[in-house]
Each structure stands twice: as C-alpha cells, then as structure tokens.
Image (cartoon, rainbow, N blue to C red; front, top):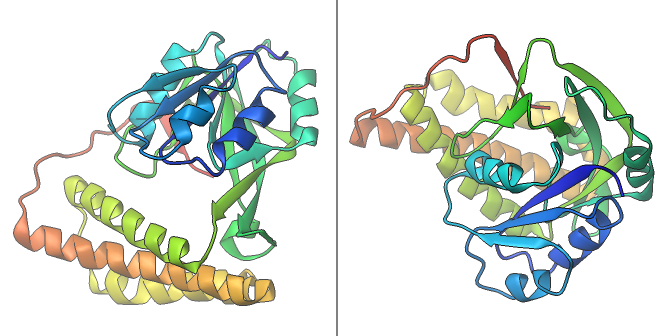
Length: 268
C-alpha cells in the first residue's frame, strides 16, 4: 500500500460510494470518510468496507475536507469526492511515487461523465485539479463553496499519470439542480466578500461563459450533453449574480475576506 491517506466527503452517495471506496482500497490501507448527514443507504454501505467513517455537521466543503485531513494516518493526502474513481493508471502511478518531498503537490487529470457518456470537450473536457498533497505544507481554504488548495510559494506542482473519473451528474435534472444550488452558495459567498452584481457580470458574463464553453472549447462536439452543460454553465453564472443582487438589496455585509500573505490560492 502507498503511504497515502484517501479522504472522501459524502452526503447521500449510495449509488457511487461503494465503487469509490473499492478503488481507494487499491491505493491505501487508510481511507477516511467524512459524512455530512446522509439520509439514504450511504452509511450502511460505507460500514461494509475497511475504512474509517466520521459523521459531522456541514461546515462547508473546505472545512469538512480539512476535518478528514486532520484525521488521516499519513501526511500525504489524496482528496477525492464520492463520485470520483481513480483508474488503474493513477493507482499504479501513486504506488510508484517517491513521496519524500513534502513541498510537492500533484495535479491530476479528470475524465468527466454526463450519465455514462464521457465528455471530451468544453470546460469538463479540460478538467484537472490539485488533489495529492502533503498536509504539513498544504491545506484547503474554507469558504462555503469553491474551496481551493492553498499552497505556499515554494511548493512545486507536478503532473501525475492516470485520471480521476468524475461521474458528475446522471441526467439533465441533476445538472440543472446543481447549477442552481451552487449559484446560491456562490452568491452568499460573493455577498460576504462585498462583490457587486454589475451589469457586465449579470448579463454579459453568462453569455460569454456559454460561448467559450460551447463554441471556443468545442462543447458542441459532445452533442446534446455538451449543450446541456453549456446551458447549465450559463444558468449558474446568471443566477449567482441575480441572487447576489437580491442579497445586496436585502442584507448588510456581515463579514469580509482577509488576504492570504505569502500564499497562492490554486484552483485548476
């Protein structure tokens, strides 16, 4: 087994969590699952496997991921979601890594799916994220949504072979539901940061996002699913600024963000 802890956060992932844990067990003998209030069969499924389950309230994506990181046995952390599965090329690469330098973080390529269809173009077809890191030098930021890994200036970012296969949505209804859900979370975060819903953000940014994803990044080559994804991106951008405008009119700003000194915030 690799000296890496796999940290997974879950909520109502009964359809996917077994495959995720089975794949993770090919990597390590330390799998930490942080469950955030599942009401389906997720907990019963997790308990069938050799992993450590912890249940907690919802404090945000980054905060709950950091809870799992703190509970891990190893300093090297592979952070994945319940709908992400490492392939055998990635598993092999992880076993062959020389994990001696804590000031290295690894960027992993993604293959994203709409239902069972692999999405090859658009934003989803270009997806990759920092997911393997040493907790002594790297940690998650803790906003309510769009958490990022915070890496110091002297951290070296390297690529690694293989992919995480991301089964993002099962159908158009789930795709649209996620677009609305993340729009609300983003709007609250933007409001707390003091951002404004300008005319450009509210009306031009959604169109630009659609055109960039669907035309310039060839999302149309993914067929009906490519159009659904581009429309969901449009909807998400449009709604988050519409919600932000409503929050700005109805609520005072109660918190501000503080700058992070000598750190880079990285989101791939």
